[in-house]
Length: 110
Image (cartoon, rainbow, N blue to C red; front, side, top):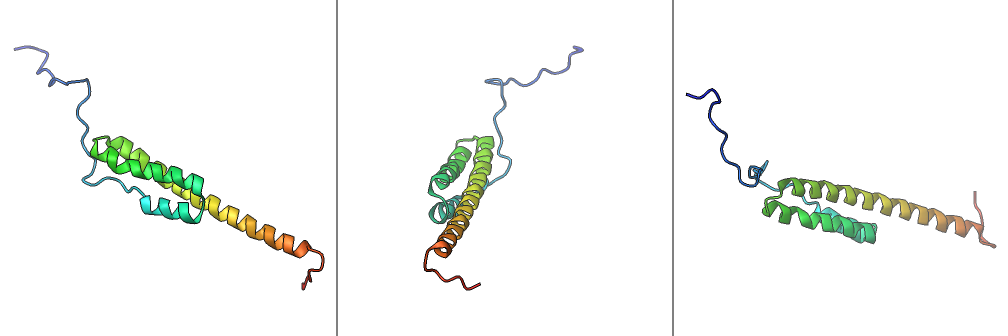
């Protein structure tokens, strides 16, 4: 008998095959990303849609960590898109009201 014990199983490529951490892919937030794009901010929403679209394809390709990362980025960009859209809308309304009140001939009924 040898003092070294049993040898480890052979590994091909140096890494064991990745196992899915769950049976279903993480949420892709695609619906939320589309709604945020339509109603809030188009340029940032497109980034959210791109990350949302990557989730299922990465999961099906076996890139489980990449799918989780894309899901987190999709959620992050969807939230950023919604916040930027709300802030820009509020600033626009404030600007319109301020401009309307500063117009000559406007009646200030305060």
